[in-house]
Image 1 (tube, one colour):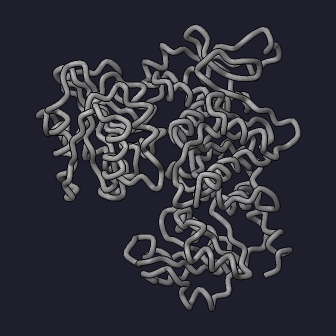
Image 2 (cartoon, one colour):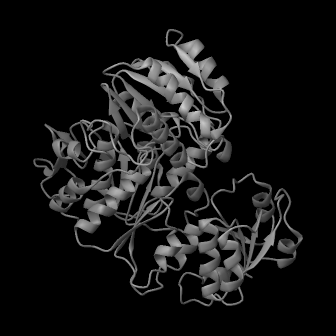
Image 3 (cartoon, one colour):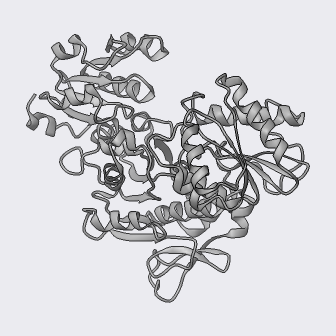
Length: 510
């Protein structure tokens, strides 16, 4: 199919019939792509390593074909013969994956699911404003906060994308939405065009922070940063960046945006003109008001954030970023305050799972990289730190060197323990370290908790902030956090199935 024909496919109501589309991957994203394209009338061929999932069994029902090949280092013959016009890539496929290298060498256009969603966003006739959020850490919390702020202003809103609900599923909701708050991973951003008919033009966008992560996937730090920067491309109203992160500021300055778009900084310090920040216990807006040189609007208070479990500095930053995005689309301050007051963060994000004998046990399993773990370490007092997993090509040594002043002991888990041994030997030789060398997933956390309990005393925090991915030993960070909570409650004699504390913690459960 010619490029000119593909250029016309910018509406649900365009002529998609006869389009041959190969879909790589059959996870949640891959199935949403196949389902959407079949509904549009395209001819769809899905490639996956197995056919054991419910999605695989549903493909014939929706009208798609499935090709199963366990080894995807070479393209299946059926895919080659299919001669696709478009290949839609699930975000798990790295750009150097053999299938992606092959696809890029064919005549087919290579899209991601988010580009497809943008092209067909007018399905219901009610076209939502898009708000984009990325960053190494804090994406999900900020996405949920922003969605809550729009909802508090009585707008229909969906939090979607990398947060779990595929964007295409939100697009196809029959009643439509006023706003889509779209969390984007660096993987999804890599596959987004920044110009042409598939390029997004969001109302507002934010990059919360940038630290080394997913370097193996991207092939290096520069490529990772470039992917994050794509979130700002073509933004119309406001690009939100972190005043404490020079990379996000540079990415904003380098972005090609729509004329009139403003750069809005956030930070936990007093904000300059056109930014948001904190003054004397108040979160304030000096960006979205006429007399911003002399006045500021109160959005909420640190006291309110404390009652919602959002008072750690990195979570305050998330609130400010979300507020800036909401204010860019005219959400009033009272709606922001209402949303924050009612908000509770997800499981596995700085979640107190128990307190007993003066010791707090905190699950921050969602700290899957050193930057996220740093925020948890800086927010805690004396810490017994449970750390380790898969570091994905990221160097953990700077974290150990710079941010372990409050760590009284460390318990290593996971596959990449040698990296931790070397980092502690070089940069923190005075901190006692202990290792869990158990490979049985069911026994990893009980051993880690037993070791930590033998070290911790009243006033300490036992912190699960692994600074690494979980896939070496657990299905995902949620499974890792759940295993930690069960082990803690088993050790303390509490309810192993719930998140009940042995003693009420100082702040509500998050």
